[in-house]
Image 1: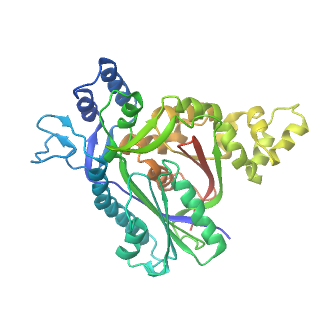
Image 2: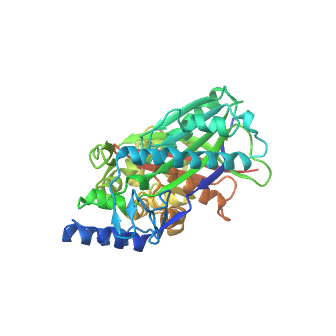
Image 3: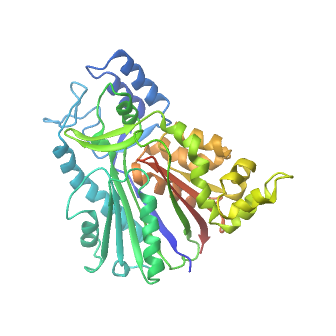
Length: 408
């Protein structure tokens, strides 16, 4: 039984942030050290981002709000609202994005009616309320009152991957299940001015957006492209617990995003992929065939249990031919650069990730779903091609998945 992810849809709020303008505003804030001012310019300039989106309509240069809470446009001053103020805006605006993304997913799947949905899985780490977004989806989309609801909260940028894995497990347990998965993040609510390097890096990257899809055992309709959800894997790297973290402070949520994260990914990405690939007979066979002549049979035989030795011995470039598409979470440009170089991927294989970053920034957990949609929408994506998805988050945790393009 193939479990598929169908009808991937994305939503962003209407207010657009131009990266160069945001950079200049952050660099001009009072109290910044000269070093911090230079770091702001560098972080924003090398981010790989041109535009981002935010639910905060005050964050425009022509805003004339009489009592601004986040940005005083007259004085070009970033304000410091409390966590309560930020979370109240999250309740209002996140609900809109959750519902709109879910509505679009259902509309894109004409053979599935709202009353067919048996489970809802929501994902977010940028705010809290109850009854939460899972409840609001049931009420606003006209789902059955008996719909089972699950919320994955405060897991960070990788959370959409365990959400898809959970949805797959529901369908495997009950082939009639239809699972609506929706992720919405309002990271811009927690951006702030600071001389702290981690805070500056976070302010140069994060943004708002939502994405949704439907997981079921139903085959895609003629002409429709979907993703078969094959395998998922979780790996915690040996180091990095303090390099990526997310905590609640008095003035919003506080992100720790160390500049050491790309190095950690560079050092451990092969080891993180090894257990995933080792569970796929087709990939292990192809990688074993790529081993150079003279490699002992014992090394090739290690494929079945632990692929790391083979990844070390085989030409890494073979990965780019064995797996055609790579959905890498664009946590930042340097993360994509390290991944491309370490795995010797083709430049075109990172275009979906780089374009998502360029036009939308890092939307935390929703971002990987944007990348997957870009891959599915690509004209060159063909039936039967494999997709490897990876997302990184606090811990440092690496969530990965193998998928197959299925065309109806």
